[in-house]
Image (cartoon, rainbow, N blue to C red; front, side, top):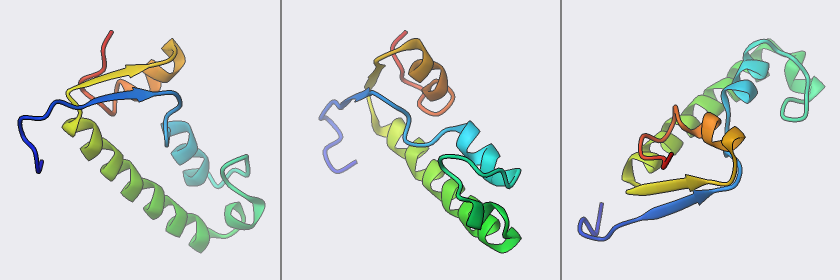
Length: 89
């Protein structure tokens, strides 16, 4: 944004956030990214969901600023393809 003629490239090894992570919080399921303390509390779950969705919006904005993005695997590519429009096939 500050340097509009500068091209940017990103290499993503692992998605920062995924739909699966968000869904676990929505469903109030305890797992690696959602502790039992949070999953048992409707209020904490709503706060965490708001946080995740806010981070996801920023993550999508970052992806729009990237001119070329590559991933290390088809699994990562599949997770990122809905978030970042300029992923290389």
